[in-house]
Length: 417
Image (tube, rainbow, N blue to C red; front, side):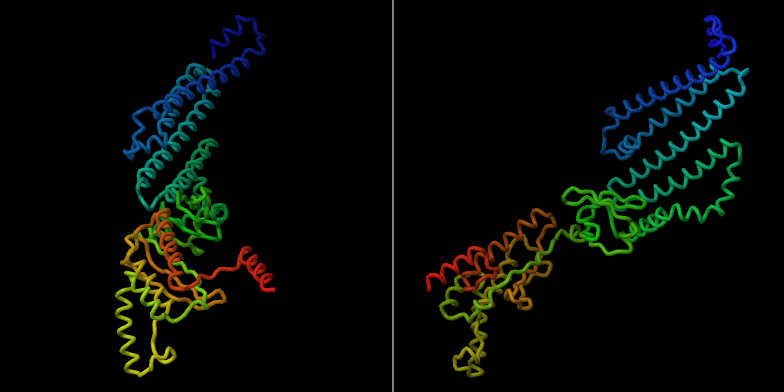
């Protein structure tokens, strides 16, 4: 500052304003030089962190250091040391009051840097742990950060006003009720997040559904109070962690784990097309490779039953094959012989309760893949074939009349007139 005063005197600056002007100028120069040093250290750290040495994602700690960018904080510490040196030059001992304030600000700056370094180290630990892990510790790390930052704030505030930190820490009991209200969501979220992790209810990469929140996609992040899900339409949906504990959601993790996905779909058969299978139809059905063994075995069984009970070859008293029964067995044999159906799980075809639309025939089986696109292709392949072959059994699939059907009915009625 003495150099600034000498310069102002040489410029014949009014004496009554020299001291004030020199002080303001020294402070502004101090801040300007500190900012230049800070910006330069930030630029160097960014340049270094983006160098080829930190582009190796395969090495966890290298990737973690790059993501946390800890070198920027180390650069801030270097800025503090240089700022301290600059303060000695600008504010020598004769300017004790200003020197005291500047030193206090530099000390606070160092305390903030220490807090930032601790936060960066915790972030590095979290990234290293969570990389390739199904159960993240992000929520726990976030809680630790909140706890440490809170007490760091108390220490910095106490140092600023010249009080001992214990003066404020001893008052936490009184502040407990206020803290419980302020950090209510954080505490509830932490508890919920801890339960989700410990009970392995949800993991990164899980496919979950929660209709109440419009959720249908993969879990991409689990934070202290929130779970982030990326839907299949690329929307990001946030769910409070507590709601995943208190409300119901559906997880597809086990399906992805075993590599098998269920097909459970039905179509309606027109009941008016159901009939007994006559000799002509049976002879036709015997050409179906999937039905040959079944028809041979069933005809023998039916013949023995009818002979034993003397049914006199009437369809009312005896047992006979039906077209829907043959089609049901064909469907069952068809799905069991497909290479993409996993026969380690249940695979069958069943009739559901009749309805005004007809008799529902349900296909129930599991594919040998959980891949969505492949699964849909396999499912379509099954129903493409079954809906195409059902006419060979003299059965009709029910569907509501369309415009073309109504037009044909109208034309037919006019023709009849």
